[in-house]
Length: 131
Image (cartoon, one colour):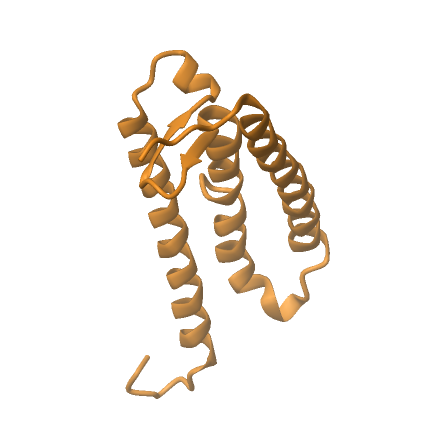
């Protein structure tokens, strides 16, 4: 079975990924504004965890890595692909780019779990056994 991806299809994928990056960046900026300026006083404790998810090497850095630095092009139905991003053009192996992506997504998952755990702990009464 031969797989061929034309230049036109590759350009469509790149355009779609860059469009997603633009929309995602705008929404990240809007959510950061709302977190910093419009957070109600009762939510100030959990705000720091949500900012962690937004800023600290998580969503924004993940978007930059995937959509600018790596730009992976999947080859479906094969479980394969190649990358065209800045770091890949500079000689970074695809294996390392994949590992960085997995690491960043793991950090995002851990930050979400910390946020849920902290929120759970704040809702429990003071003398609870689960606290």
